[in-house]
Length: 203
Image (tube, rainbow, N blue to C red):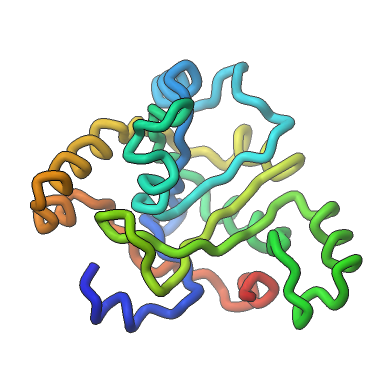
């Protein structure tokens, strides 16, 4: 991503690989969970439904989080294709993970919203190929309770193990071939989310 593009990017915008009906998000797991999930298209019984699970539309933010699939417990990177209807349901029912007085009022009101919401959103600095922070933000979407169950049971269209891709891109970055690395990146474009779905999620 060049500096001119980065400077022109809105600070808060969802960028993702998407089709007319689906959006791709990324997660990283230990192989005992990631490999069966990619093989069957569903998370195995070992996947914890009672824990919040975070999905990330940005491949490079996922690489930052998992250290190019080298961090313990994050050695298998999954590209999870989910329905846009499900993704937008989660946004509609999400709460920001931090308090913003203009949106939430006092902290007590925000804490009540956070407890009741089945999803939460945080915006973290997007990353470049060297995993350095960029001026604009990348969406992280946390799913719990009803949202996590819907994600696992209803929204998933397909799961692909993209660990080999992560390793290929990382190898090119290490040799300084950023042009070659960029050519391998997923095509993440602005996601056409209705503006009202983000009004309560922009700090």
